[in-house]
Image (cartoon, rainbow, N blue to C red; front, top):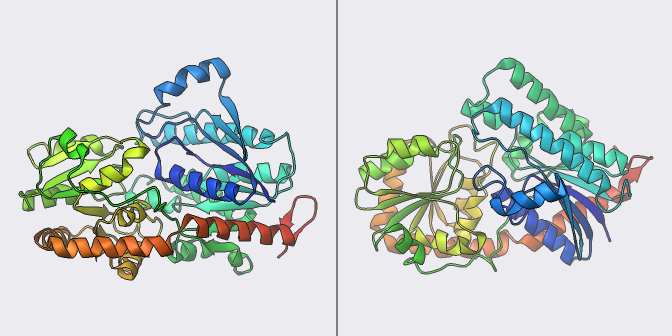
Amino acid sequence: MLRLVVLCPHFDPDTAPTGHVMTRIVTELAGRGHELHVVTSLPWYRAHRVEPDWVEPVRRGGWLRTEHVPWGSITRVHPFPGGDRRDLVRRAAGFAGFSLLAGLGGLRAGGWLRRADAVIAMSPPLTLGPTGWAVGVSRRAPLVFNIQDVFPDAAVETGAITDRRVIAAAAALERFCYRRAAAITVLSDDLGDNVRTKLPPRMRERVHVIPNFVSTDELQPADRMTAYRRELGIGDEPVVLYAGNVGFSQSLELVVHAARAIPGATFLVNGQGAARAELEDAARDLPNVRFGDYQPAERLSEVLATGDVHVVPLRRGLGRVSVPSKTYSILAAGRPVVAAIDPGTEVPRMLDASGGGIAVEPDDPDAFVGALRDLLARPDRGASMGAAGRRWVETAASPAAVAAAYEALVTGLRRRRRGPFGRARR
């Protein structure tokens, strides 16, 4: 049996995609007989503030709350969310505050300073890296650093960070985290190559590719005429759906451009984020553009079934530092994908391997509209792609396989440990 401490920014019932990922990994590892102690935030992702149902318990119980479960414990700490996601100083302060509280939770999770076999810390936020390392040193456990997006590269590519001093400081923090992790897990070969270039040659073997996954038993294809359509006042016309974070990393202006070019389809943007107000303003004169808010996790299959074609747009340069996990869910829902992402990166490779969609150049409105027109004009082709994508995720993106990979990784680290702090042999 392994004893693991898991530090992550989101966990069930929070609605963030990375929260679903870590929740399922923990569930699978618990099912394999391991003891896990999760330290995470109070649910806050949906509206960028602590969920109303959790506010009063926090007032009564303080900023750290621990729940004991059959496989270990879940400690939730205050995330210090800010109202404006574009305020990077405020967000950085929030991440730092959350990471400090998570460190305290990590020291006491499962018993103060009780020895663990590994600490698994997720990034972003990058500040969980030093937290995970400190918790690991204190508990004589190696750090497994899980990278969902490479930071600060993603923020630099989108222009969210332009100050050279801030970029240099973030890059230094990134190197600190990588060099102190016994293992670094990334979602794709592209992210792996990126991280390896920031490590000395002798440390590059620490990087391991373990892709994300989707729970195909929980997420099933469903009929396109959903109750959610009726709630939004959408009829039986074809629907092009973007579901996920409405942020500045996504080229969602492509959706507005496509809606102008294809007036016979409804374009639904389902989600919230820093760029939503700006996007709503750009689409104000378009009657075929609708907006919906995040729905409870139990409605995910229904929401995804509402779209006849799904879009996954990502700004140029980001395909090598980020893998949109929503792609797995779309394929599991049996819907075709049009992805506007850097060629040769993970999502285009995934679509090519599965036959589940079309990849076009990022930030190319004409190519994006052309791919959508083709699928909307040939619904039989879209249905075939959706079925092919579903078959692929059933075998290639299994939660059990991902959990087994983490189990094997930590077991290998445990065999190689030496010294008082469980440092891996080099």
